[in-house]
Amino acid sequence: MSDFLKFDVALPVVISFVISAVLGPIIIPFLRRLKVGQTVREEGPKSHLKKSGTPTMGGILILISIVITSLFYVKDYPKILPILFMTLGFGLIGFLDDYIKVVLKRSMGLRAWQKMLGQLVVTALFIYYMYEYSGISLTMMIPFMSGKYLDLGFLTIPCMFFVILGTVNGANFTDGLDGLASSVTVIIATFFSVVAIGMGVGVEPITCAVVGALLGFLLFNVYPASVFMGDTGSLALGGFVAATAYVLQMPLFILLVGFIYLIEIISVILQVGYFKLTHGKRIFRMAPIHHHFELGGWSETRVVAVFSIVTTILCLVALMAI
Figure (tube, rainbow, N blue to C red):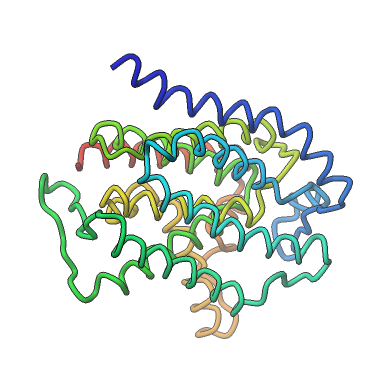
């Protein structure tokens, strides 16, 4: 057991952390020289205006760390392949969006239909692989009902599209404060690592690599952040969470461990819908909901701390629900 912990759990964390920590001082100045700075929307919290110009696309650090670390293990752990594909696939979509926005100076980035088409294609390829080649059942473990699995039958594929796209975009909305998406997701990745080890599924090298990559990235992303992950990082992390949940047969557990993602995207949907229905009225001070708390007087660090604590508690609940 000690050798297993050393080489399949601790080592991926260390390798990924070191890569992320070492590359930070190299890549961040490079991004700064390229002038790939974040443009802060004027209608956002006024305290965020000082962030304008902070380098974005820092998700490259996360992706490089995960990919290099995973390559050491992919031969012996083939189940990490679909997770790596989803992480890279969504990361590439985010990279293109960031590149168009901050390098080519087209404020919209990818058009909405282009972004959605890319997400649909990556998701469809993942679903096809899971069905045809993975050997993993698409039935879903039911929380708090030990040994019980839910089979949706013909609704399985539509449900997969809904869950994956919802998770990815929820992670994207969560990336709005220094260290928020990183802190929440490193806790989720730790949860998945514990579960993977306990169940012997064989994906712990990549889940642990994500833990290490995010810990390394947080060295530069905690308040006040010297780099933002951008869509490159947030979409990649959403893809990682969704893919890992399906490989572990635990998509229903995203409701628990990914609760922050969920309330972030729901707050946006409710805000936009209510605004249109009432011709200008709002439910929240601002959406996504982390801005609501900010405008209510909470500091960025307090919001990040509270959201991280909530995620930690819900991950512990999820462990008891297995």
